[in-house]
Image (cartoon, rainbow, N blue to C red):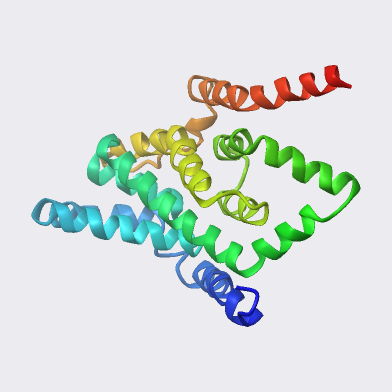
Length: 238
């Protein structure tokens, strides 16, 4: 890979960033709640007549939205619940999100990740300590950035690519880590029929309600626990 032209290596990530910028301008009016409301009957009719095709197209569109960081990921998740119910809708959403996230991860790693990771590994002082700390707690850190709602999904895909996280570990932690939040929003999508009928908008802040947020914070605490234990053991060794 060292012999590959640097521009060629960075081309996939450049394409992703370019499409993301263009999508933010040209697609923001199409991937919206109102667009879903306006086309809900056509979507339901197509699903009823072509269920398997609808599933495949939906997952493919979700992959594109995530892979190119296009606007409308939340709307796509709601659509999964609206069309396919919480289950299997959540499974379709999680699958599409994981594949899309993996595409960004690979593009970033191929373009920048390996070289940056090597530089961090060869660095000294504080930077090297941070890198070693992350390496020693990769599973915990990966689950944590997926579980915490405040971490942007795009950044959660890029950061591991720069820290030499193995692909298998990234895929597993992404798939499992996004299950809680994705399931919550998919369940909101399942209830969109009543929301449309009443002319209201869905409560996207539901994930911050105590009944939802506290269990997710509990999972975050479990993810952090191995890091705390290791830090305490490290101090005892000193």
